Image (cartoon, rainbow, N blue to C red):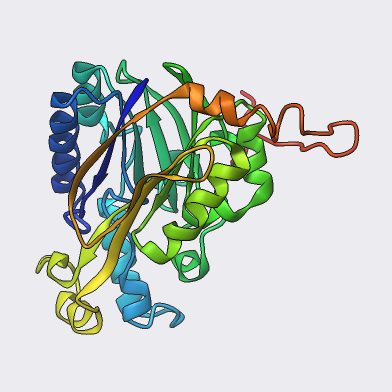
Length: 313
Protein backbone atom coordinates (compact mmCIF):
# COMPACT_ATOMS: atom_id res chain seq x y z
CA UNK A 1 0.00 0.00 0.00
CA UNK A 2 1.10 3.56 -0.70
CA UNK A 3 -0.12 6.50 1.35
CA UNK A 4 -0.55 9.57 -0.82
CA UNK A 5 -0.95 13.14 0.41
CA UNK A 6 -3.03 15.44 -1.81
CA UNK A 7 -2.61 19.06 -0.67
CA UNK A 8 -4.89 21.66 -2.22
CA UNK A 9 -3.20 24.93 -1.29
CA UNK A 10 -2.74 28.46 -2.58
CA UNK A 11 0.67 29.89 -3.41
CA UNK A 12 1.96 33.07 -1.86
CA UNK A 13 1.35 34.38 -5.33
CA UNK A 14 4.47 35.38 -7.26
CA UNK A 15 6.65 35.05 -4.17
CA UNK A 16 9.03 32.11 -4.64
CA UNK A 17 10.62 32.06 -1.18
CA UNK A 18 7.34 32.36 0.74
CA UNK A 19 5.64 29.73 -1.42
CA UNK A 20 8.54 27.32 -0.94
CA UNK A 21 8.19 27.82 2.81
CA UNK A 22 4.51 26.90 2.46
CA UNK A 23 5.47 23.80 0.46
CA UNK A 24 7.97 22.71 3.13
CA UNK A 25 5.39 23.22 5.88
CA UNK A 26 2.98 21.04 3.89
CA UNK A 27 5.63 18.35 3.44
CA UNK A 28 6.28 18.30 7.18
CA UNK A 29 2.57 18.05 7.94
CA UNK A 30 2.13 15.17 5.47
CA UNK A 31 5.18 13.43 6.90
CA UNK A 32 3.55 13.51 10.32
CA UNK A 33 0.66 11.51 8.83
CA UNK A 34 2.99 8.89 7.36
CA UNK A 35 2.59 9.86 3.69
CA UNK A 36 5.03 8.33 1.20
CA UNK A 37 4.19 10.60 -1.74
CA UNK A 38 2.99 14.21 -1.76
CA UNK A 39 1.90 15.95 -4.97
CA UNK A 40 1.40 19.65 -5.70
CA UNK A 41 -0.44 21.61 -8.38
CA UNK A 42 0.73 23.16 -11.64
CA UNK A 43 3.17 26.04 -11.36
CA UNK A 44 2.57 26.34 -7.63
CA UNK A 45 5.99 27.93 -7.15
CA UNK A 46 5.66 30.89 -7.58
CA UNK A 47 2.16 30.67 -9.08
CA UNK A 48 0.09 30.52 -12.26
CA UNK A 49 0.15 33.63 -14.53
CA UNK A 50 -3.45 34.67 -13.91
CA UNK A 51 -2.64 38.28 -14.82
CA UNK A 52 -2.34 37.52 -18.56
CA UNK A 53 -6.08 37.11 -19.04
CA UNK A 54 -6.87 40.06 -16.78
CA UNK A 55 -4.56 42.81 -18.05
CA UNK A 56 -4.52 42.62 -21.85
CA UNK A 57 -1.69 40.11 -21.97
CA UNK A 58 -1.78 39.76 -25.76
CA UNK A 59 -0.93 43.42 -26.39
CA UNK A 60 2.35 43.40 -28.30
CA UNK A 61 5.36 45.20 -26.85
CA UNK A 62 3.34 46.37 -23.84
CA UNK A 63 5.47 47.95 -21.09
CA UNK A 64 2.98 46.60 -18.54
CA UNK A 65 3.34 43.02 -19.80
CA UNK A 66 7.11 43.34 -19.93
CA UNK A 67 7.20 44.50 -16.33
CA UNK A 68 4.95 41.68 -15.17
CA UNK A 69 6.98 39.09 -17.08
CA UNK A 70 10.24 40.42 -15.61
CA UNK A 71 8.79 40.23 -12.10
CA UNK A 72 7.56 36.67 -12.77
CA UNK A 73 10.97 35.70 -14.10
CA UNK A 74 12.67 37.07 -10.99
CA UNK A 75 10.41 34.89 -8.83
CA UNK A 76 10.73 31.76 -10.98
CA UNK A 77 12.69 28.69 -9.91
CA UNK A 78 16.27 28.14 -11.00
CA UNK A 79 17.10 24.56 -10.09
CA UNK A 80 20.80 25.17 -10.76
CA UNK A 81 20.78 28.05 -8.27
CA UNK A 82 19.52 25.72 -5.53
CA UNK A 83 16.07 27.21 -5.11
CA UNK A 84 14.63 23.75 -4.36
CA UNK A 85 17.36 22.69 -1.93
CA UNK A 86 15.13 23.30 1.09
CA UNK A 87 12.34 21.21 -0.41
CA UNK A 88 14.80 18.39 -1.15
CA UNK A 89 16.13 18.50 2.41
CA UNK A 90 12.61 18.36 3.88
CA UNK A 91 11.71 15.36 1.73
CA UNK A 92 14.92 13.55 2.65
CA UNK A 93 14.24 14.12 6.34
CA UNK A 94 10.69 12.83 5.87
CA UNK A 95 11.66 9.88 3.66
CA UNK A 96 8.92 10.97 1.26
CA UNK A 97 8.78 11.49 -2.52
CA UNK A 98 7.15 14.46 -4.22
CA UNK A 99 5.86 15.92 -7.46
CA UNK A 100 6.13 19.72 -7.38
CA UNK A 101 4.88 22.16 -10.01
CA UNK A 102 7.24 25.06 -10.64
CA UNK A 103 7.84 27.82 -13.13
CA UNK A 104 11.39 27.06 -14.20
CA UNK A 105 13.88 29.66 -15.41
CA UNK A 106 16.01 27.24 -17.38
CA UNK A 107 19.75 27.84 -17.40
CA UNK A 108 20.18 25.65 -20.47
CA UNK A 109 17.74 27.83 -22.47
CA UNK A 110 19.36 31.28 -21.92
CA UNK A 111 18.33 31.58 -18.27
CA UNK A 112 15.43 33.88 -19.16
CA UNK A 113 12.72 31.87 -20.92
CA UNK A 114 10.23 30.24 -18.58
CA UNK A 115 8.91 26.68 -18.54
CA UNK A 116 6.01 25.13 -16.69
CA UNK A 117 7.82 22.17 -15.13
CA UNK A 118 6.80 19.21 -13.01
CA UNK A 119 9.67 18.12 -10.79
CA UNK A 120 9.95 14.66 -9.26
CA UNK A 121 12.05 14.44 -6.09
CA UNK A 122 12.61 11.02 -4.55
CA UNK A 123 12.51 10.04 -0.89
CA UNK A 124 16.27 10.60 -0.69
CA UNK A 125 15.79 14.26 -1.56
CA UNK A 126 17.23 13.88 -5.08
CA UNK A 127 15.69 15.59 -8.11
CA UNK A 128 15.19 12.69 -10.53
CA UNK A 129 13.28 14.36 -13.37
CA UNK A 130 12.14 17.79 -14.56
CA UNK A 131 9.34 17.57 -17.10
CA UNK A 132 8.82 20.80 -19.05
CA UNK A 133 5.24 21.13 -20.31
CA UNK A 134 5.25 20.18 -23.97
CA UNK A 135 2.60 22.64 -25.12
CA UNK A 136 1.46 25.62 -23.05
CA UNK A 137 -2.27 26.22 -23.40
CA UNK A 138 -3.80 29.30 -25.01
CA UNK A 139 -2.73 32.48 -23.13
CA UNK A 140 0.00 30.53 -21.32
CA UNK A 141 1.97 30.73 -24.58
CA UNK A 142 2.46 34.44 -23.95
CA UNK A 143 4.50 33.56 -20.85
CA UNK A 144 5.73 29.97 -21.00
CA UNK A 145 7.93 28.29 -23.60
CA UNK A 146 7.21 24.84 -25.09
CA UNK A 147 9.16 22.04 -23.43
CA UNK A 148 10.66 18.79 -24.67
CA UNK A 149 10.57 15.07 -24.03
CA UNK A 150 13.44 14.87 -21.54
CA UNK A 151 11.05 14.60 -18.60
CA UNK A 152 8.82 11.90 -20.05
CA UNK A 153 10.05 9.33 -17.55
CA UNK A 154 8.55 7.24 -14.78
CA UNK A 155 9.83 6.35 -11.32
CA UNK A 156 9.52 3.30 -9.09
CA UNK A 157 7.90 4.05 -5.76
CA UNK A 158 7.01 1.13 -3.53
CA UNK A 159 4.70 -1.16 -5.48
CA UNK A 160 3.96 1.52 -8.10
CA UNK A 161 5.49 3.10 -11.16
CA UNK A 162 4.62 6.81 -11.05
CA UNK A 163 4.54 9.43 -13.78
CA UNK A 164 3.25 12.97 -14.04
CA UNK A 165 2.07 15.51 -16.62
CA UNK A 166 1.04 19.16 -16.57
CA UNK A 167 -2.57 20.22 -17.10
CA UNK A 168 -3.85 19.92 -20.68
CA UNK A 169 -0.94 17.84 -21.90
CA UNK A 170 -2.85 15.06 -20.16
CA UNK A 171 -5.25 15.32 -23.12
CA UNK A 172 -2.39 14.42 -25.52
CA UNK A 173 -2.84 10.68 -26.29
CA UNK A 174 0.72 10.03 -27.44
CA UNK A 175 2.18 11.76 -24.39
CA UNK A 176 0.09 9.52 -22.14
CA UNK A 177 1.17 6.51 -24.20
CA UNK A 178 4.83 7.40 -23.61
CA UNK A 179 4.24 6.95 -19.87
CA UNK A 180 2.05 3.86 -20.24
CA UNK A 181 4.86 2.22 -22.23
CA UNK A 182 7.16 2.62 -19.23
CA UNK A 183 4.82 0.71 -16.94
CA UNK A 184 3.09 3.68 -15.32
CA UNK A 185 0.31 2.62 -12.98
CA UNK A 186 0.01 5.74 -10.81
CA UNK A 187 -0.57 8.82 -12.95
CA UNK A 188 -0.36 12.33 -11.45
CA UNK A 189 -1.97 15.29 -13.22
CA UNK A 190 -1.27 18.79 -11.95
CA UNK A 191 -3.63 21.69 -12.59
CA UNK A 192 -3.78 25.42 -11.78
CA UNK A 193 -7.11 24.67 -10.16
CA UNK A 194 -10.61 24.12 -11.54
CA UNK A 195 -13.14 21.35 -11.18
CA UNK A 196 -14.04 21.85 -14.86
CA UNK A 197 -10.59 20.44 -15.67
CA UNK A 198 -10.56 17.52 -13.24
CA UNK A 199 -14.03 16.01 -12.85
CA UNK A 200 -14.22 14.44 -16.33
CA UNK A 201 -10.68 13.55 -17.30
CA UNK A 202 -9.61 11.96 -14.01
CA UNK A 203 -11.89 8.88 -14.05
CA UNK A 204 -11.63 8.56 -17.84
CA UNK A 205 -7.83 8.38 -17.82
CA UNK A 206 -7.87 6.08 -14.81
CA UNK A 207 -10.03 3.67 -16.77
CA UNK A 208 -7.98 4.09 -19.96
CA UNK A 209 -4.68 3.40 -18.21
CA UNK A 210 -6.15 0.95 -15.69
CA UNK A 211 -4.12 3.02 -13.23
CA UNK A 212 -4.73 5.20 -10.24
CA UNK A 213 -5.18 8.73 -11.57
CA UNK A 214 -4.55 11.70 -9.28
CA UNK A 215 -5.55 15.28 -10.08
CA UNK A 216 -4.00 17.91 -7.83
CA UNK A 217 -5.04 21.55 -8.09
CA UNK A 218 -4.21 24.83 -6.48
CA UNK A 219 -6.52 27.43 -5.01
CA UNK A 220 -6.41 31.08 -6.10
CA UNK A 221 -8.57 33.85 -4.73
CA UNK A 222 -8.63 37.61 -5.24
CA UNK A 223 -7.27 38.00 -1.72
CA UNK A 224 -4.15 36.01 -2.71
CA UNK A 225 -2.91 38.88 -4.90
CA UNK A 226 -0.45 40.66 -2.62
CA UNK A 227 0.34 44.36 -2.68
CA UNK A 228 3.94 43.77 -3.78
CA UNK A 229 2.80 42.36 -7.14
CA UNK A 230 3.01 44.94 -9.95
CA UNK A 231 -0.42 46.27 -10.96
CA UNK A 232 -1.94 44.44 -7.99
CA UNK A 233 -4.91 46.82 -7.78
CA UNK A 234 -5.76 46.37 -11.47
CA UNK A 235 -5.38 42.58 -11.24
CA UNK A 236 -7.61 42.35 -8.17
CA UNK A 237 -10.26 44.55 -9.81
CA UNK A 238 -10.42 42.25 -12.84
CA UNK A 239 -10.18 38.94 -10.97
CA UNK A 240 -13.27 37.10 -9.73
CA UNK A 241 -13.52 36.26 -6.05
CA UNK A 242 -12.22 32.77 -6.87
CA UNK A 243 -9.98 32.35 -9.92
CA UNK A 244 -9.12 28.71 -9.19
CA UNK A 245 -11.53 26.62 -7.12
CA UNK A 246 -9.49 23.42 -6.76
CA UNK A 247 -11.14 20.19 -7.81
CA UNK A 248 -8.40 17.85 -6.55
CA UNK A 249 -9.43 14.20 -6.68
CA UNK A 250 -8.29 10.59 -7.10
CA UNK A 251 -9.82 7.90 -9.30
CA UNK A 252 -9.18 4.17 -9.00
CA UNK A 253 -8.12 1.91 -11.91
CA UNK A 254 -11.76 1.04 -12.62
CA UNK A 255 -12.74 4.73 -12.86
CA UNK A 256 -14.46 4.87 -9.48
CA UNK A 257 -13.72 7.68 -7.06
CA UNK A 258 -11.20 7.16 -4.29
CA UNK A 259 -11.56 10.84 -3.42
CA UNK A 260 -14.19 12.81 -5.36
CA UNK A 261 -13.35 16.39 -6.41
CA UNK A 262 -13.05 18.90 -3.59
CA UNK A 263 -13.66 22.58 -4.35
CA UNK A 264 -13.27 25.85 -2.43
CA UNK A 265 -11.28 24.14 0.32
CA UNK A 266 -7.64 24.23 1.29
CA UNK A 267 -5.92 21.45 3.20
CA UNK A 268 -4.47 17.98 2.74
CA UNK A 269 -6.41 14.85 1.86
CA UNK A 270 -4.92 11.37 2.20
CA UNK A 271 -5.54 8.07 0.46
CA UNK A 272 -4.17 4.53 0.70
CA UNK A 273 -3.54 3.10 -2.76
CA UNK A 274 -3.34 -0.64 -3.38
CA UNK A 275 -1.20 -1.86 -6.32
CA UNK A 276 -3.22 -5.10 -6.43
CA UNK A 277 -6.18 -3.04 -7.69
CA UNK A 278 -4.13 -2.22 -10.80
CA UNK A 279 -3.32 -5.87 -11.45
CA UNK A 280 -6.97 -6.85 -11.19
CA UNK A 281 -8.03 -4.24 -13.75
CA UNK A 282 -5.17 -5.08 -16.12
CA UNK A 283 -6.59 -8.60 -16.48
CA UNK A 284 -8.89 -7.54 -19.30
CA UNK A 285 -7.12 -4.42 -20.62
CA UNK A 286 -3.50 -3.27 -20.56
CA UNK A 287 -2.85 -0.38 -22.96
CA UNK A 288 0.89 -1.01 -23.22
CA UNK A 289 0.78 -4.77 -22.67
CA UNK A 290 -1.49 -7.48 -23.97
CA UNK A 291 -3.88 -4.99 -25.58
CA UNK A 292 -1.18 -3.18 -27.55
CA UNK A 293 -0.20 -4.03 -31.11
CA UNK A 294 3.38 -2.79 -31.63
CA UNK A 295 3.53 -4.74 -34.88
CA UNK A 296 0.90 -2.31 -36.20
CA UNK A 297 1.36 0.97 -34.30
CA UNK A 298 4.40 2.16 -32.35
CA UNK A 299 5.47 5.43 -30.74
CA UNK A 300 8.87 7.09 -31.05
CA UNK A 301 9.77 9.43 -28.18
CA UNK A 302 12.72 11.83 -28.35
CA UNK A 303 13.87 12.28 -24.74
CA UNK A 304 16.88 14.45 -25.49
CA UNK A 305 16.92 17.80 -23.70
CA UNK A 306 16.65 20.40 -26.45
CA UNK A 307 19.10 23.31 -26.62
CA UNK A 308 20.20 25.89 -29.15
CA UNK A 309 23.82 24.80 -29.43
CA UNK A 310 26.11 21.86 -28.80
CA UNK A 311 29.64 22.93 -27.98
CA UNK A 312 32.56 20.71 -28.84
CA UNK A 313 35.74 22.01 -27.17
